Image (cartoon, rainbow, N blue to C red):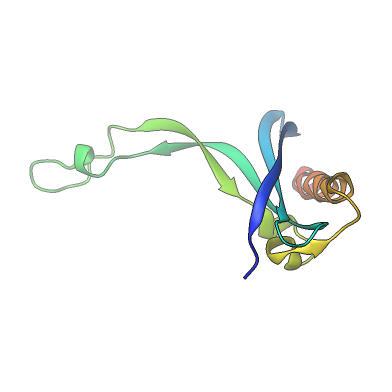
Length: 116
């Protein structure tokens, strides 16, 4: 069984449709094998949440009147990964080399949206 330790957490903004979106890249290293890394990538977005119990009327109808706007992180690792090994562990010469490739894939992911 592989155990990974968080060794780096990086945040930066990307622009998508004139909106700045926060991206978080987490890099982990295998505690038993040097230079084996994995990653998780998160995109922060604003979602309107409708609490069920607070939005039920007297006859159990869904009113959808009360909501809160929340910043939530959604994992996008599988959408940007070159390989499933990004989740299970992949060898690189150093953390920076792996991070640069992950960041490059994140930027390419957002560029595809801009072309749509």
